[in-house]
Length: 381
Image (tube, rainbow, N blue to C red; front, side, top):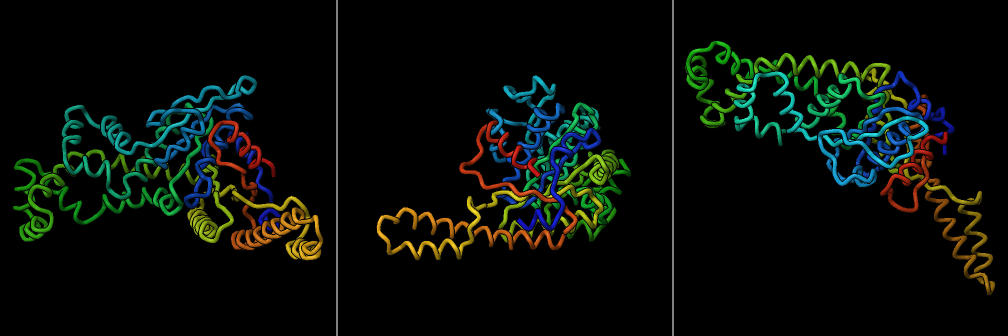
């Protein structure tokens, strides 16, 4: 594949064995095998390199749990049993982000029980912690920061959502800062900090026409809920921002390795290139590209040669099976050429990014043995 010829080979085992690497972030478009790749890397780190590893998925799909032989995943790391770590001494744990549970844990950690109960009862908090856009990505940053701070893991492998959402994952600290510094939030916080009368009456008294307009748009009850939510979380905002920015710095550090996962398809490669450009501009450590589901002909025979041979044998009796095989090989060879051309769009734009290609598997991965096979294929540079 030109992707491997044009760029240095990606040595995944070197990354997984490096004690200085504590976080591996797998990112890319949906449907390219990203979750499977993350699980395979985590399993290999535990079995082959003896690292105490946790894999965190932000994707709500259950593929990760099923492939690791677990009935379910939740916000608490669960140890994966029955893997081959006797010789290495490693461990493998897995978990799936629960954004509301993570938000609740943050509130409990940074407020007293009475204030936490007030926050949990607030309708605006209930909506924001479950459904608001951006909450999942910010809580992913919180969870990653928590896992890192605990110091229990040699390696944290993060399986992100499809790549545009993964960009939201990177943008979470900046978006949070913009929210905290926003004009409307400051207007709502000003009366909250002044104490005394009820939140809504203070807003109305202090801002006159502004509050009347907001009340018409949002409704009195929603404005009251929002003001109460802002007041309750006021003391926590600085901590939110500080932790998000700290996690962002961790993602820029030497201890983090980003792996782009793609398939040799135009949309997936375009997403990978977009993300690679973003990582480069943010000075984040891009370790390499994993190109999944690559098709490789079994014989060193071009499509044209296969078709020509099929034509020669087509009129000769007794060679019908050979003709079909040659035509099938020609179709596969043509597909391989198309995939090489698509992959070259990335490797030509980012010639210094290490890359490895993984052959398409005959069946979906659904168990630990399948994950081992994928891990071996990724590590075969």
